Image (cartoon, rainbow, N blue to C red; front, side, top):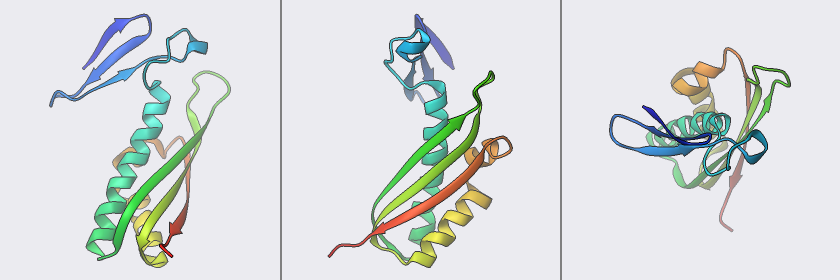
Length: 135
């Protein structure tokens, strides 16, 4: 459910009662007090894939200490301002084999990430990764 609060601010709630604030940027007439819908979409793609990565690496018995997914997107200049391109960089800390990480990313993007699959028909999604090992 989406409920209008004021101006261009809304609260998005799911059926379990979780809520998130969505607002337009100041440049677009909002107050910038929440995710913009586009940034929320980027975050959803990254979170969906991150969940896959954690689950897949766990099944592969890889020791993952931390995971960060940095996502950026390039929007169409004219309306509708859909995302033409998205890039996700996975920053992994732990004792993770490079081949296992590459395979996990591939499985996420090709088979498991439903949010990524939803936008992949319109946006080109690319990935990269970095493995940080403790010295």
